[in-house]
Length: 97
Image 1 (cartoon, rainbow, N blue to C red):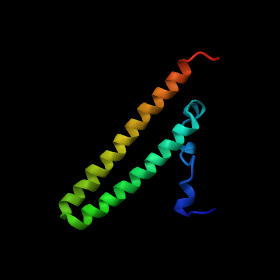
Image 2 (cartoon, rainbow, N blue to C red):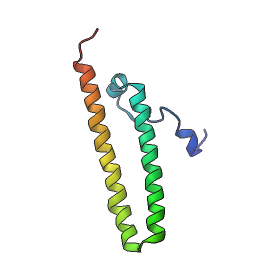
Image 3 (cartoon, rainbow, N blue to C red):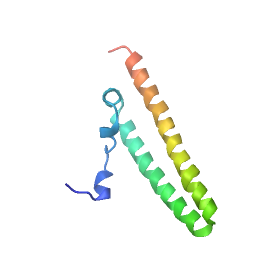
């Protein structure tokens, strides 16, 4: 088994973490877009972390790690949950054609 990080970040990497009902009712493009959004968020947070660590004092960096980065991840989880639930509900309510 390969543990190289870039091998895990291929299209559809996130599918295994999505519930079965969501997997059945979400378009593949939505799951792929969410995966790319998470990868972009982690890259952005890493870059911002580097900038804050290099150019700001320790207290600012500690606040960013404890509040800013965690808050960004929690906000992204909440946003993804709302978007996925909306898509799944619309598909489940939609009459079968």
